[in-house]
Image (spheres, rainbow over the protein chains, first blue to last red):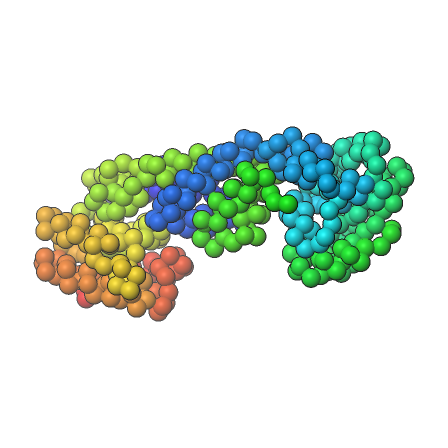
Length: 198
Length: 198
Ligand SMILES: [Zn+2]
Ligand SMILES: [Zn+2]
């Protein structure tokens, strides 16, 4: 005996989520069907809309359903300073915990030749064009202190210096080996304001 | 600065899932957008279909998109034995780990007067009709050994005895205070075959 086809499809589909195995997928499906059908329908709609319409900002690679994200469209933000981060979550963490009001560049990953992630996969050609075009005076590296984060920082720093931008890096208040996303607010704020020239 | 509207809606919508807070919701959204868009679209479709079409089997309350579930439609199964469980997951666990080939009745919960869950919420009127109509000879209680599980077992046992069915309960190999869903296969199999008259 197996679950009905629609239920089996739902449980199977939940397994696409990070860290969700067979048991969690089942629990999620039952939870929604038992008392959260309206919430389930809302999630279905939000998901369908998101995977269809959300793309990367053409300037900074942040997720957005417009051509340019809210930050890139905001003319009051300082375009001479660009903060390079690994993920959209890092942008949110910095926005919430620092007074930085410049621009961002979201790598959507880290250099990892073994996994086939090189400069192009991180959109560094877009960043290069921005450095060549624009008035970038300070490029702030806010990548994690992992081995791959270090390699990425090194690569981006060399690129920026080639175009005459000064490069800083947020202070190593970030725990060694840690992911930026999980750093507490105070540490992150301090690390940001304590950034030093590279 | 906030996430774009579509992204904010997606992150918010994920929080309907059990145990998913703000951070996990964000991680799920980014994970799908970064490399699992096809999987995300599939999940959206499966969810929309499930919340619209999946209902309860009219005979046993199992989830199904048909009027009657696969087990209730299977004429080769023994309709004289009905196993009462708390959740659809328990049906799956018993099907996979025991040789029981009778029918089920899924309570979709436990008696909990404080939470407003009485006999009607557990569909016990449907079970009563089945006991009154049918050739139920043995009613097997396979509910968890929690306080509410005990009260539920007591109630269902009295109901079944009123209609002349003999009542058994799966052996207390199930850990006291434990949920049936999390019991390992061997314990569950042993507890089931060791069931005794109540
Ligand atoms: Zn942007
Ligand atoms: Zn059924």
